[in-house]
Length: 200
Image 1 (cartoon, helix red, strand yellow):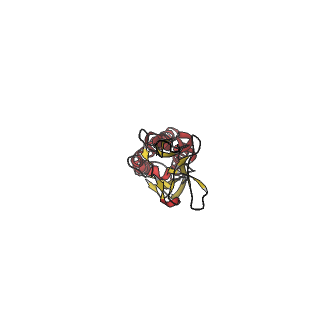
Image 2 (cartoon, helix red, strand yellow; image 1 turned 45 degrees about the horizontal axis):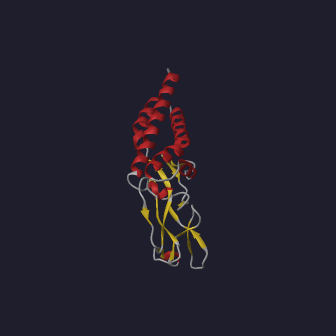
Image 3 (tube, helix red, strand yellow; image 1 turned 90 degrees about the vertical axis):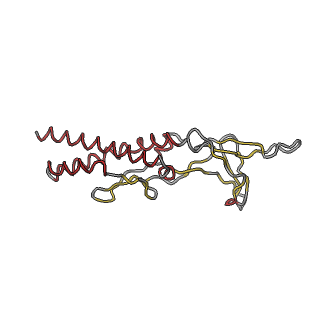
């Protein structure tokens, strides 16, 4: 479950395995198994998160992986995966559609950015103007840049969602919890089986 700009790793799925392991192995062996499980999960977290997010949102796996940072411990049995808060750009990260501002005969054929594909398979309408940027129209610059003018008249790129914002969206949040939990469960059971073979 996301918490702030990090994805909290829910270990409830693996607690039964952890308790069973503590009753079977020495404390040192149990700690090694947990360590190896976390290392495995950390290495796989980028691709796991990217696979889930790209099914719901119109971003590439490369973009999603780039915004997943290194997993870190927050307690004895608590971990989180920090997520970069950088927001995707309209036009490059998210595709955009444009429309003529005026269709009147003789009017200049200026265009504005009408919509962007944030969620996969659907288009979100963008506001006609951006009040937080001085009430200026979002306009296309070339084929892949959506921009507006700030109050200081400086051109500013228009952004969409960030990875942390995507991660808190339902049902994406539930899918992330499930994928990470299932992966951790498989890895801890694998390491327990390996330890049992060595112990036997």
